[in-house]
Length: 272
Ligand code: 13P
Ligand code: ZN
Image (cartoon, rainbow, N blue to C red; front, side, top):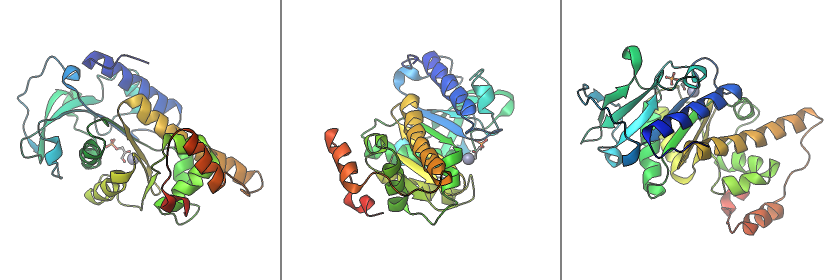
């Protein structure tokens, strides 16, 4: 695990995460995007600061003056995993929270990810509900989680209940549950707004037919969060193809696991 307290260290954690996403098969071509809301110590030293302000498409008063390290639209995680200076950049949010300017990176006129509205609304809501702790967001396309959304008509409670029941670690890693976001066009504001609502209560949300979003204090934790949910979906898939899913953790077993870690599960999600 790299030391991410400096900008250089943070770039190394981005490189490691991007490579993991590629090797896991969750980042075909330019799939997926990464953003980190920078701490003071993580800001890049060389900041030209002469970029043009660009409308962000959403307004995020909670992020006024923040700097974010963001992947570029069209960038390949496979490539970022080799060299994060290719395919990443830093943006600054203006004083009204509705525009950004590029400060660092973004080689050859690259621009921030097409999912920037989702990243900005997610950072804003999670900064609020986590008391500022959540800073690193990953959007990626894990095969089993996406496939799962094609097997039935889910909502947040039914998806959470299914994931929890497939793998005891899930209640520990995401005791607040996993949000479900019905399909919206990728990169659109409707997706960003629907995701924001889901992420107010959860640090993890699945986008129907598309992918997943996870946000935690650092990239290792965000990746671990997604990895745990994907593992549960993979277990479900293997069990289903091995003759059918007939059993799984019961409500009592789920509560017992959570209680042993001092956690409480939302009874409404257990009904799913
Ligand atoms: P970007 O290349 O614009 O980041 O888009 C990838 C993606 O996964 C869209 O949902
Ligand atoms: Zn995507």
